[in-house]
Length: 341
Image (cartoon, rainbow, N blue to C red; front, side, top):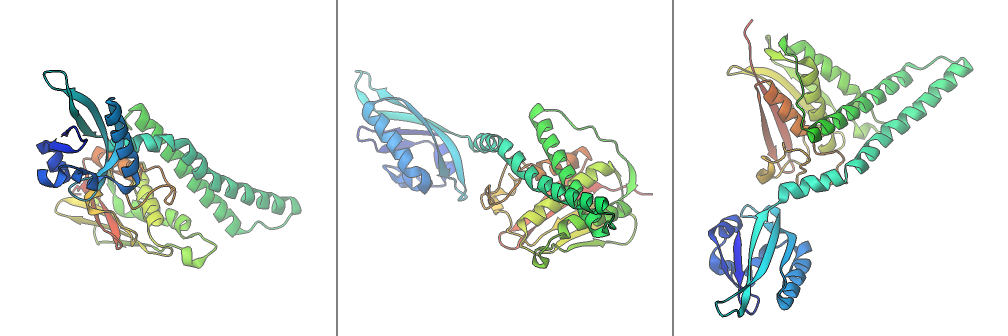
């Protein structure tokens, strides 16, 4: 995206690439019109950098958020240099911008990765420590160990195991290695029932009844055969359950549907959460990406869940479908090639 400014510092040219990105006309961007697209939090810094270097006639490079034609703010890197006429006289600045939003978000996520690891592990580890001390107390006193205590202990271990798996996936992504899967013909009905039952306790467990998520499974009649790796299916569902529980309101239902349609086995997870901005639905399967309405640290996680689900889905020759409406909820559907008995 190319721009040029004249001697007074105001812009007198933008190329077609810039105008398409902004969705505005040249007349609208001319002068200081382009600043209307700069994010309010970045505007002062952006102008101070530009005008300061302009006055000193020094090249500059800076990053700021610029509103795209669809209303989404994207991080861009803007680099400008002085230009001279044939007689060597200073005539203004000329510059170019590139969209670095993906890199910027990934760098920021990686920078916060160690902090996220510590934060994510702290709660289940503390919970395990407390439960273990209670268990030890009961054993030493000869008291009967309560079944509920053992169930809570198992739930904490399952949660911790899931976090370790997610961190392992993050390391695998960074190393660029591919996960090996072992597929066999399976009827997903008993498998999905087992997975839902195993994870329901984790999602429902809470000291406050109002915080419990109701995990509801609906299975269409008949067999739902596909070539799958059961461990991968469980991992995909675990990530979808975690996302649904994270973004749905306290006590909101999480619906799981298993069925078959048009030669595909369909496995979907729906929530009544905050939803995803329409312009960003295509981005949420990128690793470390976070939707603009779900910033850290308000919403925990590494931004890897949907990226992992998408990768595993494609490894099964399937496809991922995401439907979402802001303030209403999200439905994520795994579509796998169906087999006939």
